[in-house]
Structures are given as C-alpha cells and as structure tokens.
Amino acid sequence: MDLIVAADKNWGIGKDGGLLADLPTDMKYFREHTTGKVVVMGRKTLESLPGKKGLPKRTNIVLTTNPDYEAERCTIVNSEDELFEEISKYEPEEVMLMGGGAMYNKYYKLCDKLYVTKIDAVLGADTFIANFDEDPDFEVASESEPITENGLTFKFVVYKKK
Image (cartoon, rainbow, N blue to C red; front, side):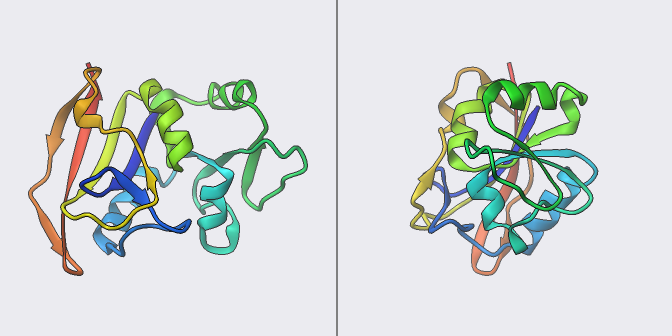
C-alpha cells in the first residue's frame, strides 16, 4: 500500500472537512497516481468528495464503524480486519491510502511509498498527520522542483520505507 496526501508546513492536511488549498496541478498529480487503482479512505473523506460518492475509475474502499453505511461506487468495510481482508485481494502497489487524518496516522507505517505534496505555507489546518521528515523509517526518494500556483509554492516529494 502507498499513500497520497497534500500537507502544509505544519503537516496540516485539512480544514473544516475539506482540502487546504485549490491546486489544480496537485489534483492532476492525485488523478495520475490513483486512477485505475484501489483507493482506501475513511467515511469523513468519502463525505468530503463531490456527491459523497466514490471516485470514478477507481476501486473505492471505505472504512466506517457504521454497519448500515452505503455509498455509491464504494466497498464498505466495518473493521480493520475487514479492511485488510479486502485490500489483500489486490497487489500492494495498486492500493493507495487517501485519507483522512485518522487513517493516515494509523496506517502510514504500513505503506511502502508516501506521495506528499508539500505546500510551503501554513494554511490554518485543523487536521494534521505525522511529520514524515522526522520518521526514521522513511527517507526522501525524490523531490520535484518547486511549483507556484494560486499564490502557493509546493513540491511533490516521494518518501520510501527504509
């Protein structure tokens, strides 16, 4: 399993249930890395998506404790055991963890690669993830040149498990 996220300088990833910034280049990067793959998310992340339904052209797996929860284009799992049983049906490199904060913080250490859009600003987040730069189990494998869009500078950084 891999992970994909955009984070500000404080490792903030969201505010009021939504993204921190409108970065079309980052959204394109997200699509390129998730289309045709299995995306794993929590219920709150699903409900932040357009129409509160799974993303098209992907297999969407949603973890929620609500056994009656249903969502269009989604496979719903209700426990960690069910989640791992479901993702075990796919090749690890085809599975991408896409949020939210609780899911990232709980499962990022199980990921082989972390695709992080690092935004060079503090954006007033209320949801945060671990600082991957301080995790001794991961190292930077690649880093793009800085990109500036909508008044924000960011770069794409890929971490890999040591």
